[in-house]
Structures are given as C-alpha cells and as structure tokens.
Image (cartoon, rainbow, N blue to C red; front, side):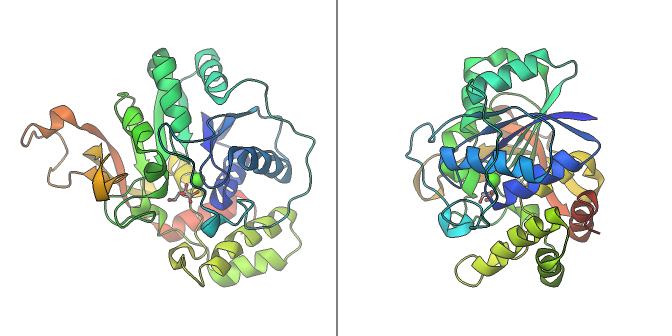
Length: 316
Ligand code: BDR
Ligand code: CA
C-alpha cells in the first residue's frame, strides 16, 4: 500500500477525493490535515470529519492547520462550493473530533514515525505544507514525494492564468516547490478533463447506495452551480483525480519540466511551466539552475479515471 497524508480544504471535490482515498485498497490514509481555502478552516474541519463518517472510514487522525494564507487574507470559494463548502448537501452530525495538535505537528510526527516514506497529497492551498517544510525541514528526506492538485500549464480558473490553490497562497506554493522533494503536479490541464456523465451522477443521487447518493449529490452540485459562472466544473471528480494519479499513473501523460510560481502583478499565482525543453534536462538560458524541475501531468485518459473513481467506490 501507499502511505499518504491528505491535506485538504473540503470542498466538494476534496470530499470526493477523501472518499476515493479511504476506499482504495492500495492507499493507506495515515492522517488528514485541513487548511482554509474553499471554505473557512472551521468549516473544512467539520466537512472532513463528516465525510469520513459517510465513508465509514476507520479512525483517521484529522488536524486543523492554517486559517489563512501566509500573507493575504483568506478568500473563500463559496461561489463554487456553496456557503458550507459542500454545496449544501447537509451531512449528518458526527461524533468524530479533530486532534488537539496542529496540522503541522500531525504531519511532522506522522512522517517521522512512519515505517515507509510517506506521500504528501496536497489538494488545497499549500500553506500547511510550507509551514511544515520551513519549521521541520528534516521531513523532506523522509517523504516519498509530494503530489499536488494545483497550477496549470495552460489556462487558469481563479484568474486568467492562475489556478485557485496556487493563487490562494502563491508564497506557500513557492516554498514547497523550492523544497527539493520529488513532486507531481496534477493541474488544471488534467483536472478539467475528468468528469462523470451528468445522467450517471443524477442516477447515483437518486439511488439507494448511501455513498452513491452523496457522490451523486456532490457531482450534481457542481452541475447545478455550472449553470452560472462555473461551467468548467460540470460533473468533475476534481481533486479525486490527483488521488487516482497515485494508483494509476500510467493513465497520465507526464513530463518533467521546469516550473516557477509567479508572485507579482497580473500573473500572481500562475505556475510558469517551461514547455520549450525536451526531457527537461537541457539548460536553456540557465533556467534549469533556478527553476524547480518536477513531473507535470499534461494529459489524462479521462474516461478511465472517471471509471476508476466509480469502481473504487463500488458505484459501477
Ligand atoms: C482546486 O480549487 C478548489 O476549488 C478545488 O477543491 C481544487 O482543489 C481547483 O482549482
Ligand atoms: Ca481542494
């Protein structure tokens, strides 16, 4: 199995990702850490605990982290995820409670105590990861790698060029990129492709399976919201695709490319991906010296990931 820590801002598609991770037999979720992003930190923690109940998950430690980005104030994405972050699907109350330690401390001890190198899966603004890597740089060597949903080698969503997670805390993303930990970026280039068909989502929402009803409702919320400003979200499994990448990387086209986070001006929060190089090892204008070179998912077998997602949840 692949031991992972999930860092989330639950969030409609974070909820889908948690369900998938908890249900997939090859993934072992050691801990979940929460950060402000799609919704306030308090709401993110509550949503995360409730979705673990919905998944009938074992006792997985959950901790609260940063309430806001390193520099800027928090800016919720309630226009995409609804006021409660889950599109108003009203999950039942839960007995689960968050740990008394901070997200940074839960990540540190989980990584340092693990028998095998841990994969850090970041599905949210990277504030918690940046604080961890700055406070406890010794964790870097103990990590297998970082897989993050964020960034884009093409179009943005928060702005014309910036993806939400990186845009929400660009300095944090820059710190994480700078850490030297092997990294896979699962950005909008692939995120925007993997969707469950509208009819299938509607059938799940109206069906008998309790998890299926939640999944259908979550997918359907995106569908409903898509009627106004967020058409790109129709039926997307979103962050769950980044977790699919752990178990089926062969369904992605991945290239090793130099990347930098734009911190200023109209481009703030953009991931500048140098697509000029072949293989990423050649040095052009000295860029490879200054830019982190990471794996970037540029294309995906989208029907396969949608199928993998539904199969893993026993919904296909
Ligand atoms: C990312 O931002 C959030 O809206 C989603 O949960 C995802 O992590 C997409 O830009
Ligand atoms: Ca997210």
